[in-house]
Amino acid sequence: MPSDVAAMLMEDRALELILKDRTFRELTPREKLIVAYYHLEGLRQLNGGYLASPHKGEKSGDRYNVFWLRDIMYATYANEYIGAYDKMIESYRLILRIFLKYKNKICAGARKRHYLGSCASEVIHARIHPVTLEEITDDWGHHQLDIFGLFLYKTGDLIKKGHNPITTDQTETLLFLRDIVLYLTTVRWHSDPDFGVWEEGPERHSSSIGAVLAGLTMWHDDGYYDSKYKNKVEIHHIVPIPEEFIETGRAALKEILPRESESRAYDFVQLSLIWPYNIIKREDAMRIVKNIEDNLVREKGVIRYPGDLYYSSNQEHPFGNEAQWPLGFAWLSIAFSKLAIRQMRTGDISDIPKDLIEKSEMYLDRLESVMTDDGRVPELYIAGGRNSNIPLAWAQSLYVVARQSLNWLYEKLEM
Image (cartoon, rainbow, N blue to C red; front, side, top):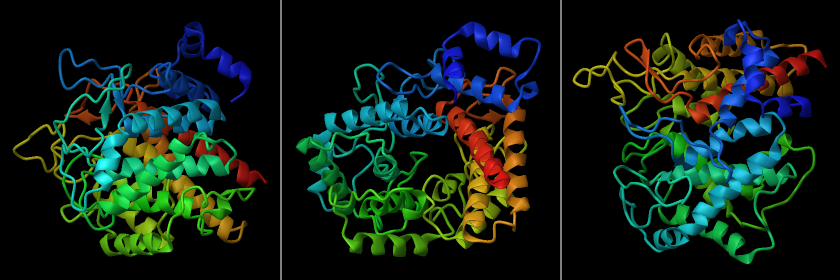
């Protein structure tokens, strides 16, 4: 994003001028990007974290104006897609600070050889106070393997792109990264249950297994992700990952796919296996998006999975009354644009995957249709209305990613 645009984002008046006499859907693509990013910046804190949403929980629901570790890592993704790597690095350094703050839990967990329960003393909680960085609650399942998988994956990815979020000359940090790997392998990430992205379970989740596999694969540096990078930056010597871990993880993921878990034949969080991780074969990716399109897409969003009770309009009869998440539209748009780009890289450049591009455009358009008139992405719709979490930080970020992914696709088509 040009520096003049970045400067504009610091002025509330700029937003008023852009939206004057127009709704978000009436803006140009560039203006939409500016406005969407502006709202995301409103949730960013001085320490580099992002509030999950502005909602303080006064009238309804739980308070969301706090940190969720996963949400921060996805929320800051928008910065990479506009070239603001300094902000992304700052966010990941905050996550590392939080991990180091509770290092004793990781080390305690690494000494165990059994499944870690919902609120065990060996588990870092998912929700953190935005100022004190203290854990807030132990009311639900916090044994969530994908958080560590995402952290390992993205830190390795950033280093390989020349943007280092960790200080490699600090022995404590390097040893702690190895502690994370030891923790993951000790709790048998490939075979034991966790609570997954939605903090529900315990079950084995393909999204959790895929996240950890992607993280370990990134640091193993066996060539799987090499095509992503212009320059080869070897990092395997920093955090050595045995080949056995990769082979075991791939076998475990193959065993559970295409299901998300024993209880869920499909879940839209499986889109993470396509983006950001790209850890599954094309045929598996196409099957996952087909399952989601055929079974989970609704008018105002994508339901997480059939029978989802979270914000269900009828708790006694949840099937058909699930909450609809606009975030799912954003993720589908990203998934289709990434699949299109990968097909163009591996096939004949003249064989343009028009069907994938059209799907990406369609889901981005559907996302914009359910955003607020001023360009914010709600967490969910239920019974026709929105809940109070507006905007939802990582959904706002994924809008930016979706729009920029399409922009990059268009650029490739013009080459």
